[in-house]
Length: 223
Image 1: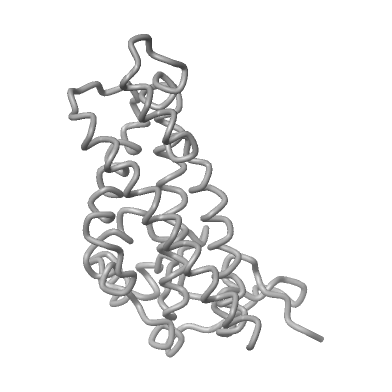
Image 2: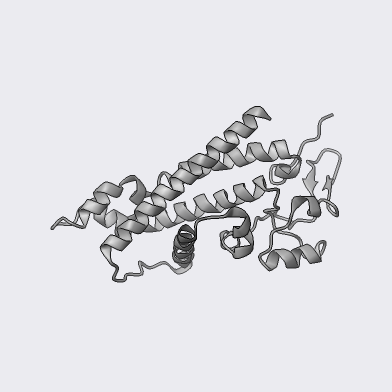
């Protein structure tokens, strides 16, 4: 009888399964990132700064859709980063401190854990004969590492985002984290720099995601 694996950890069963999930994640990433309001409406948004009367696009981009855009960007690249880590055989779930003290400390220090190393001391188990198999040694709810963790140097050595884009994501993440007590933090900004930053993030991000999708589509189709 074929083993049935828990959805949360079946990504670690074998590399073939892992790459299928990586491709699935990347498609989700593109779907979310392509729907960022200021990306989809960039031309109209840029033009709105030159108009005497401010349009709906202006107010949406600067205020009404801003919080949602921040969530979309962070959600997209949290999943992108984890997809790349998985493709490099890096663990993306949080380690249980009691069963894996050394790995727990390594993860807390912002250093990636190689799956092969983790599997030397942790295996797939099941609690009862009719239960799904899952990877031992992880936190009970099978939480994954945070977006902030994936932006740290140790993980970025593996992921390799452009320095400018990494800074853009860090800034967006700081703003997104204010949602626990959200107010529209206003502040002066230079319009050309603001628009240039958005255009860069749109162009760089979408192109990179598309390239990764194409790469892994080829890999999975020949596997």
